[in-house]
Length: 141
Image (tube, rainbow, N blue to C red; front, side, top):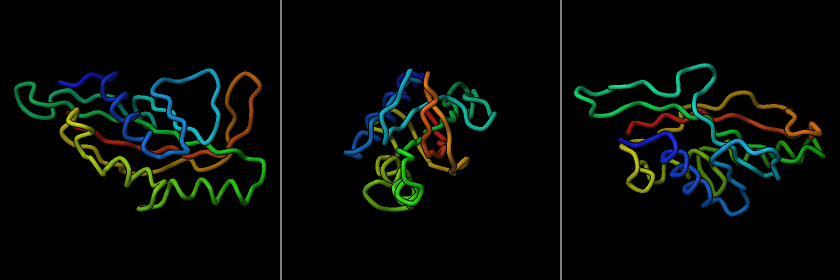
Protein backbone atom coordinates (compact mmCIF):
# COMPACT_ATOMS: atom_id res chain seq x y z
CA UNK A 1 0.00 0.00 0.00
CA UNK A 2 1.24 3.42 -0.93
CA UNK A 3 0.99 6.29 1.54
CA UNK A 4 -0.21 9.83 0.86
CA UNK A 5 3.37 11.05 1.27
CA UNK A 6 4.85 8.52 -1.14
CA UNK A 7 2.19 9.26 -3.75
CA UNK A 8 2.75 13.01 -3.40
CA UNK A 9 6.45 12.51 -3.98
CA UNK A 10 5.83 10.21 -6.98
CA UNK A 11 3.56 12.87 -8.50
CA UNK A 12 6.26 15.49 -7.88
CA UNK A 13 8.94 13.37 -9.56
CA UNK A 14 6.78 12.96 -12.65
CA UNK A 15 5.79 16.66 -12.77
CA UNK A 16 9.44 17.70 -12.50
CA UNK A 17 9.94 16.34 -16.01
CA UNK A 18 8.40 19.65 -17.13
CA UNK A 19 11.65 21.68 -17.09
CA UNK A 20 10.19 25.13 -16.38
CA UNK A 21 7.84 24.03 -13.58
CA UNK A 22 8.74 24.37 -9.89
CA UNK A 23 6.98 21.52 -8.07
CA UNK A 24 5.96 21.54 -4.38
CA UNK A 25 4.82 18.17 -2.94
CA UNK A 26 3.68 20.06 0.19
CA UNK A 27 2.04 23.47 0.53
CA UNK A 28 4.83 26.10 0.68
CA UNK A 29 4.77 29.56 2.26
CA UNK A 30 5.55 31.16 -1.11
CA UNK A 31 5.67 30.06 -4.72
CA UNK A 32 7.80 31.11 -7.68
CA UNK A 33 5.79 30.49 -10.84
CA UNK A 34 5.39 28.66 -12.95
CA UNK A 35 4.69 26.38 -10.01
CA UNK A 36 2.66 23.30 -9.15
CA UNK A 37 1.44 22.55 -5.62
CA UNK A 38 0.24 19.04 -4.73
CA UNK A 39 -2.44 18.60 -2.06
CA UNK A 40 -4.64 15.65 -1.03
CA UNK A 41 -8.32 15.78 -1.97
CA UNK A 42 -10.14 17.61 -4.75
CA UNK A 43 -13.05 20.06 -4.61
CA UNK A 44 -14.31 18.82 -1.25
CA UNK A 45 -14.12 15.14 -2.16
CA UNK A 46 -12.30 12.70 0.14
CA UNK A 47 -8.56 12.30 -0.23
CA UNK A 48 -8.76 8.55 0.35
CA UNK A 49 -11.44 5.93 -0.24
CA UNK A 50 -10.28 2.78 1.47
CA UNK A 51 -10.73 -0.75 0.17
CA UNK A 52 -11.49 -0.12 -3.49
CA UNK A 53 -10.68 -3.78 -3.97
CA UNK A 54 -11.49 -6.53 -1.50
CA UNK A 55 -9.20 -7.54 1.34
CA UNK A 56 -7.17 -4.32 1.46
CA UNK A 57 -6.05 -4.87 -2.12
CA UNK A 58 -6.04 -1.16 -3.01
CA UNK A 59 -7.24 2.28 -1.99
CA UNK A 60 -8.39 5.15 -4.21
CA UNK A 61 -6.77 8.56 -3.73
CA UNK A 62 -7.68 12.02 -5.02
CA UNK A 63 -5.13 14.80 -5.31
CA UNK A 64 -5.20 18.37 -6.51
CA UNK A 65 -2.33 19.65 -8.59
CA UNK A 66 -2.66 23.43 -8.66
CA UNK A 67 -0.65 25.19 -11.34
CA UNK A 68 0.15 28.91 -11.08
CA UNK A 69 1.75 31.35 -13.54
CA UNK A 70 2.71 35.04 -13.29
CA UNK A 71 -0.22 37.36 -13.91
CA UNK A 72 1.52 40.57 -14.97
CA UNK A 73 0.11 40.45 -18.52
CA UNK A 74 -3.40 39.00 -18.89
CA UNK A 75 -2.99 37.53 -22.35
CA UNK A 76 0.53 36.14 -21.83
CA UNK A 77 -0.52 34.53 -18.54
CA UNK A 78 -3.47 32.80 -20.19
CA UNK A 79 -1.35 31.52 -23.08
CA UNK A 80 1.18 30.13 -20.58
CA UNK A 81 -1.44 28.50 -18.34
CA UNK A 82 -3.30 27.07 -21.33
CA UNK A 83 -0.19 25.03 -22.24
CA UNK A 84 -0.60 23.06 -18.98
CA UNK A 85 -4.25 22.37 -19.87
CA UNK A 86 -3.53 20.89 -23.29
CA UNK A 87 -4.21 17.17 -23.73
CA UNK A 88 -0.76 16.69 -25.22
CA UNK A 89 2.50 18.58 -25.41
CA UNK A 90 5.63 19.23 -23.35
CA UNK A 91 3.76 21.16 -20.62
CA UNK A 92 0.57 19.09 -20.62
CA UNK A 93 -0.14 17.99 -17.04
CA UNK A 94 -2.33 15.19 -18.41
CA UNK A 95 0.31 13.86 -20.79
CA UNK A 96 3.15 14.10 -18.28
CA UNK A 97 1.31 12.31 -15.46
CA UNK A 98 -0.27 9.66 -17.65
CA UNK A 99 3.01 8.93 -19.48
CA UNK A 100 3.79 6.54 -16.61
CA UNK A 101 0.47 5.43 -15.11
CA UNK A 102 2.32 3.63 -12.32
CA UNK A 103 4.30 6.74 -11.32
CA UNK A 104 7.56 4.82 -11.31
CA UNK A 105 5.98 1.67 -9.87
CA UNK A 106 4.54 3.50 -6.84
CA UNK A 107 0.83 3.18 -7.75
CA UNK A 108 -1.44 0.90 -9.76
CA UNK A 109 -3.02 3.61 -11.87
CA UNK A 110 -3.14 7.40 -12.31
CA UNK A 111 -5.60 9.48 -14.33
CA UNK A 112 -5.94 13.23 -14.73
CA UNK A 113 -9.71 13.45 -14.65
CA UNK A 114 -10.44 17.18 -14.94
CA UNK A 115 -9.37 20.78 -14.44
CA UNK A 116 -11.37 23.43 -12.56
CA UNK A 117 -11.09 26.88 -11.09
CA UNK A 118 -9.24 28.60 -13.92
CA UNK A 119 -8.68 32.20 -12.94
CA UNK A 120 -6.86 34.77 -10.83
CA UNK A 121 -5.84 33.86 -7.30
CA UNK A 122 -3.58 35.16 -4.54
CA UNK A 123 -0.85 33.35 -2.64
CA UNK A 124 1.43 34.01 0.28
CA UNK A 125 1.84 36.63 2.92
CA UNK A 126 1.74 39.57 0.52
CA UNK A 127 -1.13 38.10 -1.45
CA UNK A 128 0.74 38.07 -4.75
CA UNK A 129 -1.67 37.67 -7.66
CA UNK A 130 -1.30 34.69 -10.01
CA UNK A 131 -3.34 32.96 -12.66
CA UNK A 132 -4.04 29.35 -11.74
CA UNK A 133 -6.00 26.18 -12.33
CA UNK A 134 -6.64 23.01 -10.28
CA UNK A 135 -6.28 19.54 -11.78
CA UNK A 136 -8.14 16.60 -10.20
CA UNK A 137 -5.92 13.51 -10.15
CA UNK A 138 -7.32 10.01 -9.43
CA UNK A 139 -4.93 7.34 -8.21
CA UNK A 140 -5.40 3.69 -7.27
CA UNK A 141 -2.67 2.16 -5.12
